[in-house]
Image 1 (cartoon, rainbow, N blue to C red):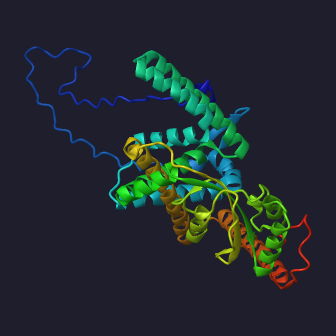
Image 2 (cartoon, rainbow, N blue to C red):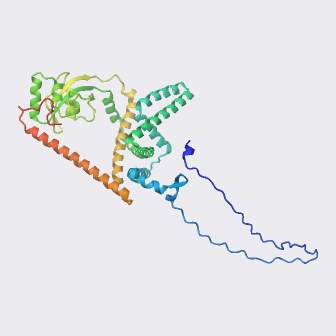
Length: 409
């Protein structure tokens, strides 16, 4: 079926046999007398070969890519609409692939087809984790039993399922397979660049800290984020009169994500990143049901309530050492690749000079759109700051309504 869709190339073999044979004493119509003297054939000089100018190179854009009712449709006719619809995106991706390849070469890193395949397999397994994990578990079981045939069958099934899911995903996201492949290639180069540096940065201390984060003591707390001392006083007044902590959090907390959960935060350990040090220290010093005094950090005030504290899991460090290291390595590589990708995109755009007028117009429009979005975000931030300043100067006796959190966020 694929052959019928592709352009069929016919190989035309043509040859001409040029026989310029000079024979001495060509035979006449009558045979010579047997006693006739032998006359040497005269020496004939070979003509100099004529110089033939090479044919002019055909314009590649004139190459037919299809025919309709016998009439050719050329590559040039196709290129215009393609550039207008997808040109800039494809161009930037191609340039990023080229730049990432050059970066890897400068770093002395070789990237093979096997590396590209590994990146694709890992990406698809992460994108379609539920389906992949189930089949991968069956593959591991078949391998453990030595059932090679079953493992091979399951791997083929996994590849088919991932391919189908990928097709659906690309269709929904309006991404072409070629664009997806370019992104995979960029990520492969960047991953190979990042891995050596990350590998050298991981030591036993970092592995121990990661172990404590995963398996150590954890706390489940609720918190109320407040903007100023007036809000703190109002929140404490409500708690003192018997209002539930989660109700006050829903009404007053500026952290709207946790406010919707009654102020509840995900369980965290003493080593967990993303939480201020003094916040964690105060939280772990609380007893279940106890509410803290105001904790000031990053320009906000927090009231923290300890819901429960969970003891470390009964897991020995040595038992999970390698697994923790791998998890730490993967997370660090992921962060490094993200940083490298942002730097790569910035370098490509800064060094990009577009000659094609259509692509140049697309690029200018994209820059304009981005600047407009930045201005919109800045305007929103200014509005929020203005509302917060208004709330800060409002008297404590006039708290925000229960249906609208203070600060208007």
